[in-house]
Image 1 (cartoon, rainbow, N blue to C red):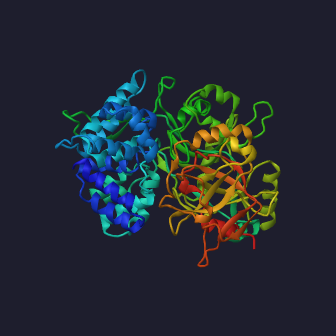
Image 2 (cartoon, one colour; image 1 turned 90 degrees about the horizontal axis):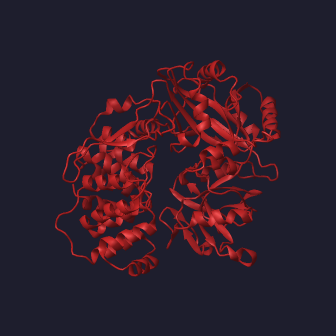
Image 3 (tube, helix red, strand yellow; image 1 turned 135 degrees about the vertical axis):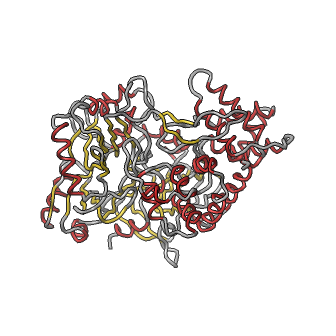
Length: 614
C-alpha cells in the first residue's frame, strides 16, 4: 500500500473530533493492511517506529529539519524560516514547500517510508546529522505533499492526531470482532506486552488463542498497576476493612527485570522489503552498553521507558547476587533519592534528576537512591501476577530476605495487615511523621492487573496545611504573560487542566502562578519551547474568558497543591448543565514536569469529585 493512503487516513483522524468516528475510520483501514504492513502502521500511528520501551528515537530537532527541507527543496532558509514563523507547524511547512515542486508519479509505499525512518533513527555518532539530512532528502523527494506533512511531524515528535491507546485498542477490537467486546482482553494483553505492533498483528491475523496466552515475560515491561484515591482514613477503611497497608513514597516508579540466562540483545520487530533490496528482519538494540557486557538486568519507568543505564547502582546491586538469585524475576518498586550526608529523603524533583543521558555516574553518587520493592510479578519460571497479593508478598519477602537483606539500596517495602480503623489511622499518622506522602491500602486478594485503576489499591495522601487531602496532577494548557517582576520571564501564570474520561478532554481547573522558584524559570522556559500552538486542541476544553495568551500542546504534567476544591463558572472541569465546574482555591505549583507520567495519567474529574470538601 502507498504511504499516501495511510496519510489520507491520518488526515481524517486529525480532522475528527469524535472518538467513535476515529475508531470507525481506523478499524476500516486496519482491515485492509497486508501482514507486513501491520507493525509499521501501528508504530507510526503512535509517532514512533518501535514500541515505547525500545530506546530508539529520531533525535531530529525542528531547526535541523528546516535545514533538511532547505537542502531537499533548494529553497532559501530565510523563506522556509519565515513560513515556519507563519505556520507554526513543521508539517505544514514541509507540505507547502513540497507542493511547489514537480510531483513524481512513483510514490513511496508504507514499507519504504518505514524503512527510511528506521534508517534515520538508527544513525548516531560523528557525521550523523549530515546523514540524517540525506535520509530525509530521500523521504522528501519520494513523498507527496500530504505524506511529507505527517512524516515531518513524526520526525520531530509532534504528530498531532489526538489519538490515544484507548482509541487504537477500540479500533483493533472493531477490526477483529466488529464490536468492542474484546477490549478487556486487549487491555490485558497490551498491559502485559507493551508492543502495539505485536498485539495488532495477533488480532488482524486472527491468532486469538495466542493473544489470550500472553503472560508477563522478563525483559518486556508491564503496564504499572495504578491506584484510586480517597479523601479520608474512614473512606479507605470502608472500601477495604481488611487491608495490607504500605507507605506511599514520593519517588520514581521502577520495574526491575532480572534473568540469569540473560535477555536477548535484539528485539525483532518487522520484516519488510527495503528500497531496492531485501534485508533480514529489522531489529532494535535494547540498550546493552559497553559497560554491561552481559545483559541480565533491565529497568523500566511507569511509562515503560528504559531506565537501565540511568541506575547503574541498582543494576550492580542485582548483578553481584547473580549466583544466588532464582532464574528470573520482575519487581515493582519505588526509587526515592536520599541526601548523601544526612540519609534523609529528598523531594521528587531532585530524585528525577537520575533520569538523564549524561553524567549518570556522577549523579548516582550525588543523588543516591533507596529502592523500596512492594510487589513481584514473576519469579523463577512463573508468572505470579494473577496470584493473590498476600501470596505475592510472601514470595517477595522470601526473595529479599535470602538475597538482599544487607543491601543498602534494595529494600523490602513495609507491609502491614490491618483489620481495624484505629490502627489504620495510626499508620497514616506515622507515615506522615516520617516525612512520607501517606499510605496505600490494598486488598489482600487483589491480582496485579496491568494498567488498571480500581479500589483494590487506594492511596491516601495529606496536605497538612490545607483542607484538600492529596495533590492534583494536572496538564499545562497554556500561560498568561507576566507583569511586574514576572515580566522578565514572560509568564505570569499557567492554565492547567485535569482529564475527563467521559468527554475524553482536558478541562481547566486552575490558573497557577505561585510556588515557582526563580532558579526554576530557565528549565521551565526551555521545556515549553516548541509546544506553542495556534488554537486550543480538540482534546481540551477552555472557556473564552480564560483563554491563555499562549496556548500549549497538553504534554507537560505538573503537581498542584491547593487549599480546597470549590466551584467556578470560569473552569470547565466537570462542568454541569449550568456551566459550573470545579476549581482549585489558592493553587500552588508543587512539582514541575512529572516526566514519568503521560498527560492521560493526570487526575481525573471523577477523582476531583471525591476530593471535594462539602
